[in-house]
Amino acid sequence: MNQQQRFVKATQWLRPVTRWATRVSLNAPQWLPGAVRNAPLRCTSLVLKAYHLVLR
Picture 1 (cartoon, rainbow, N blue to C red):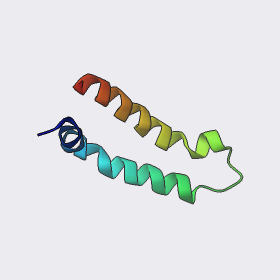
Picture 2: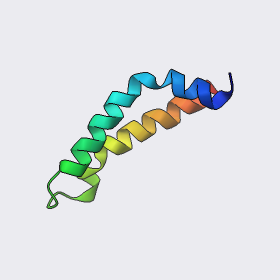
Picture 3: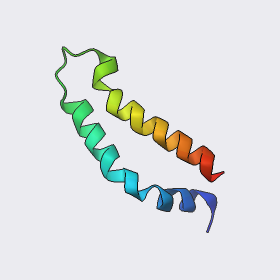
C-alpha cells in the first residue's frame, strides 16, 4: 500500500468533521469576518497537516 492510500485510510475518521466544517463555513452569514467563518476549516487543515507529519 503506498503512502497516499495509507494516509487516506488513516484519516477516514476526520472526513465527517471536514464535511461539517465545510457546511458551517459555507452557510455562515456573510457579515462574519472571514477568519471566523473559516475557523473550522483551518482547524481541520491543521489536524490533517500534523497527522501527515506524524505518519511520515
